[in-house]
Length: 117
Image (cartoon, rainbow, N blue to C red; front, side, top):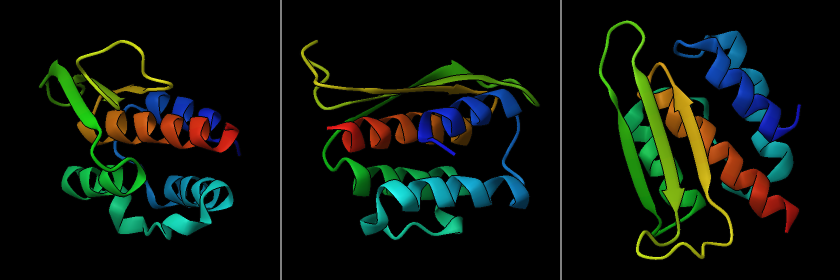
């Protein structure tokens, strides 16, 4: 499965990923970036996802916006190399009902963009 398609699917799910849904995400990341050595636990919590973002794009800005509405919030995550300019080569944008889904979708789009270069 391609990373952009995985990101789209994560956004569509609207909840936390199940065990069955995490496996294809891990496989897609490992296929494109085996150097990341990503583990399932890194995709399960906001704090661990933020550490994963730091491994993928160290020093980048993480912009989080949303409405914390249970059970379906409206979150957006934007990953940018530099927030003070609009000349970033690529950025990652994700959205989701959960904060972790938005962060993961944005991260997958960044990894996909990196792989295309």
